[in-house]
Image (cartoon, rainbow, N blue to C red):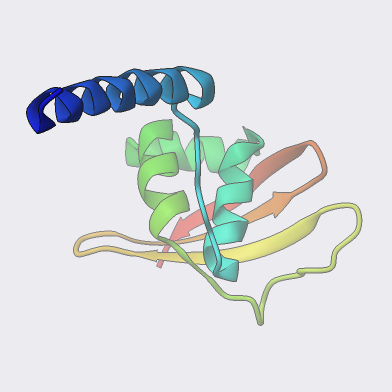
Length: 124
């Protein structure tokens, strides 16, 4: 058996093995948030998000939607931990600031055991 034949058989075995490994382990949803700001925002979006009436009215008047909320506000905001109640019982309350080229918002939300709630949002 020549070197090329051995190499071909080896590559076939490796490719079949890779297919089995990919089938066994498959694609995984993986996210790593090491910083406190990212962990809090990720936890708020992972839970069932509810709105207060004040926040719902603000979203209607500003023409914002839930896509903007999750993709922009909850991913690019900075949490002010000094003004937040991190150890609140039963829910922790956070104050977050969102700054963009044209938009500047301040929002208050709380994270409970089962749900998270957007309490208020306003323009700065």
